[in-house]
Every structure is written in C-alpha cells, then in structure tokens.
Length: 192
Image (cartoon, rainbow, N blue to C red; front, side):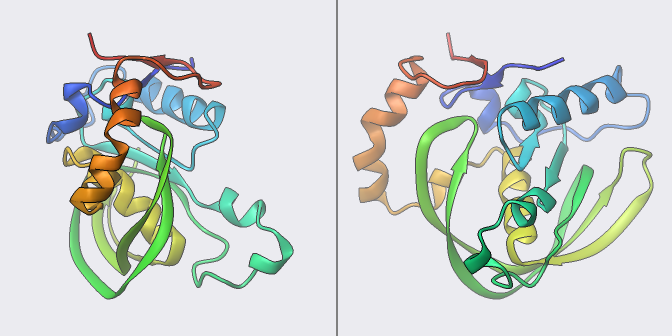
C-alpha cells in the first residue's frame, strides 16, 4: 500500500526515533509499504518517520541511480552497482574521507534541492529485515543516501546542513510546503 509522505514542518521529522525488535507490530507490512511508497515517489531512500512511523528503520536502493545514469556519468562513483537494503536500529560507527558536495533533495521537502557536504565513506552497524546484525562500510553515492536516511531517524534534515543565509532564502518555500501549498505527483500529509 502506498503511504503518504510526511511533509516538512511535521514534528515527527524532528524526533530521534526509537529502536525496535522483531516483535514490532506489522513490521513486514510496514517495510513492504515503504518500498512501494519509495518507488511510487521516485525516491532512492525512505525513512520510517517520513511515513509517520517514529522507529529506527530506513531503506535505500542506490542501484537505481546507476541503472539510470547517463553515459557521461558512468564511472563517476566508486560504489557501482550500488546497494539495495533495509536498515533497522542503525548506528554509525565511523565516518572517513573528505566531505564532498552533492545536490540533495528529499521527498518530505519537495522541489528544493541544495548542495550538501558529506563524508566519502561510512561504517554503519545495522540489522536487516530478518534482524541479522551487520557492520558494513559504504562509500560514494550509496554512503550519501545512507547518511541522508540515517539523519531522518536522528531527527535531522538535509536543509540543516545549509548556511543560515541559504536557509533564510528558502524560508518562504519551506513555509509553503508545511502549509500544503505545493503540488507533487505523490501523496503527502501536511502538519495540522
């Protein structure tokens, strides 16, 4: 089932999310709905708070970035062919490498894209959908997508990385999003 995406301004997007265990109610259904919602919204990652679930769960599919690359973009990122997976109760162990800029967007903040600097590499500990524990290192565009989604379960948004002047310039657009004064081709729910 396609779930509505929670819009900027909703308090749940600023909440540090709770850990869960395998007895979390309807977890398989939530994960399946999140995949369907993410693909329907043309996203490459989706975090549970974005669908109104304040739990430490997100999923990513950076494989589709590589599948949809233009010819001149091939070989630009070291992590080809990407990664697709579920991250539960994730915690970052280490960040390495130089910070690099990439023009990020977010399903909860539609029609706004800005350059954000993030580390080249991260090591993260997480459980998959079967609650098997993993510690993995990711780099390139996959690391960036993971860091973006990880921020969501920590109550952080990509706009938090922008300089104050840039955020001030975006204030009207952000206010319009939180008031529902925006048209997108996926379902959204706006703050009351």
